[in-house]
Length: 543
Image 1 (spheres, helix red, strand yellow):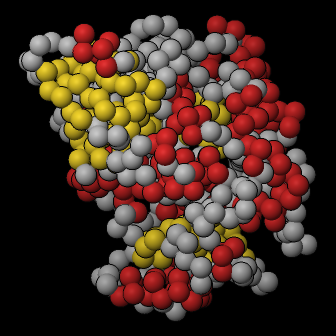
Image 2: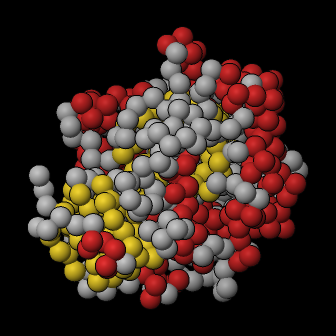
């Protein structure tokens, strides 16, 4: 049996309201055996224990990214990254150099571009043709809701002037009606279907490598809204004993009837790999101007094809799907960006809960794994003020990504104007009684949780603009932001009984920081360094 470990000499941010910031913590057999004052903790130790001097450093619970596209992020690590590339010419040069290193028949793949930084309209297929050497190219915008492709890719997918727009998507066209290289929402699917799939072994290796990177920033748990290929990869790693991350994996909407037929219910699994919610898209994104709006976007061209955005499903279909899931004990996780999308999803959940009253409240029992987990809305970026209180009333988790707010300041001001007063409304949602669960939405944004914590506390970009923060009344304190990256996600996954805070009996998932967190200025939070990441008492990262 391993020796007890005593960690003391620094501030232990337990996030347990009955303990607060403790002086010491003791670990035994992968769990917290004592936490509190030095005297209280030493009294609980076995005689032969290991002492770890924190030397003024801080400890926090393990961080959870409550919304990350794991396999996508892992595979994109080897592709073109156009995040924060502010010049269109620079983007073309990056693509050119990457394409030149590829075999002649390879696909040119990438992500992260943001044409609002380029101060121009959408890029075109012909411009991409110039730098890809005849290879097909598919490069997603940073929000993943639109893609820039070249003519070789359009030809592979048989997309032409005579192609119809698919349901839930559109094909960008020039003045003559020819495809112009932009694909929106489900308009991307035909090209995606032509891109060769990596092997199972490649997916598993990419995920393992990416998990190691996440450990370096203190992440010990993640919630993953991806498809069966990702679940198959993590299940294989789990079966080999090689899954070094706690994962809540969601189910794709088109698999609902299979899940119902199997009797699959939210919460199945264990403390390492668990089935979460049914993932549904209700609308598009802000940056692609496809979020579903109550009123038209501001500042769109007069001929904009979808001034109110694009609802991904008609109202009846969305209501029926959510009711079908909830009636069968499958909680829902619904992507909603615009105020119309959020209202419609809240309406649908409320209707389903009334029809299935036994599902009104998630199970908050004391078992290690709760039987039912909450419904949730992902992103919840723009809310009509009258809808904010409904999250708390309906028990709907607001699963949000703070870094979206600071990344989207310019485009939100442009497209939403004064409506942005109730955008990314963390403080208002919290006051309504809603559970906040924070994540990154990587690879849409950086997966680094400290960038998100900085955004939540300051509502400023990395360069400290705008002065005082963007709609600063929605800022959170540091402890509140940490809560939303730890306890909030644990409640959201029904796992609050054994993780999320550092309490006696909970798993020893914790992060030792290089700094005294109380002394870190808000503007420096993104630069906080991790000294050790520990999962179930075992060190998985040491700086």
